[in-house]
Amino acid sequence: MKPAVLVSRAIFPDIVDRLRVHFDVQDNPEDRVFKKAELIERLAGKQGVLATGSERFDAEVLDANPQLKAVCNMAVGYNNIDVDACNARGVLCTNTPDVLTETTADFGFALMMAAARRIAESEHYLRRGDWKKWSYDMFTGGDVHGATLGILGMGRIGQGIAKRGALGFGMKVIYHNRSRLAPAIEAECRASYVSKEALLRDADHLVIVVPYSPASHHAIGAAELAQMKRTATLTNIARGGVVDDAALAQALAERRIASAGLDVFEGEPALNPALLTVPNVVLTPHIASATIATRRAMANLAADNLIAALGFGPNAGHPPTPINAAALKG
Ligand code: DGY
Image 1: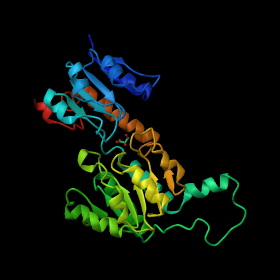
Image 2 (image 1 turned 60 degrees about the horizontal axis):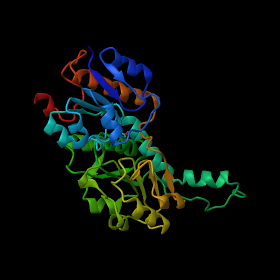
Image 3 (image 1 turned 90 degrees about the vertical axis):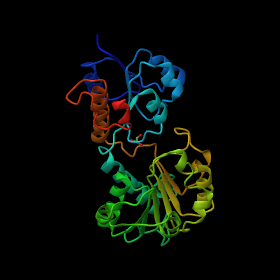
């Protein structure tokens, strides 16, 4: 008998079929978002799950399903998984790094440019029929080329954004990270390490790419926004919760900073309603990795991880991108 697995959200049907070769798969083609009780119920008897960031795997879910051996996220971020709880129960977790780096960096850069050059705001103006004449100061924004790009969180995606800024747009790149990068990587990205205070003070365009954790909760709040230039933009492609959305909405309304580009939100898909009332923000629904090629690569990598984690396929026992490899040894 094949082991049973759950695919918790709708994904590419042909990739679900890859799983069916090895597993008895319960999938979710209707794409319901399971609340905790339903997730617990659907996991009954399952040895593994191919999950997305929208389901939370905590001690309660794991304890209700002690047979569960692997949680394989189709996302690079894994703040939906309580990794300590998984470690304590020997549950292997995997994510999908690398395959989305360039696509997500493209999007972060695009969102930053859209905020700086007021693309969404001016498009709304045009669609409303408000454009009656050209004027010298209509939707004047801030330059991107030659400006100072500040990056908070200099992992792979942050590095991709740095290279785009430095090499493509002649930007001066500064970054702040938990730990400083090796000199060779700094040189490749043409990026200089600075304190968080200097980052906030000096960036013309601040891009947030830091993973969400209790330590990064509201890393950007009212106090941090107050340190930024009035002409600066802020772009968040990391996770809701890294930025205090209420404080940001207020800063935007008061023109304390020029504009923002947001792909992620606290409590998404719900939004802080104040964000919908300020014009100087570009809002997108968590789509930074959303190209067909990249979403397929993410789903395939999550499937590879699940197949290997449960002892099948060419990498049996060695999933390509584990988060807690220690659970494999245990
Ligand atoms: C990720 O991979 O973490 C993206 O944010 C999509 O969830």
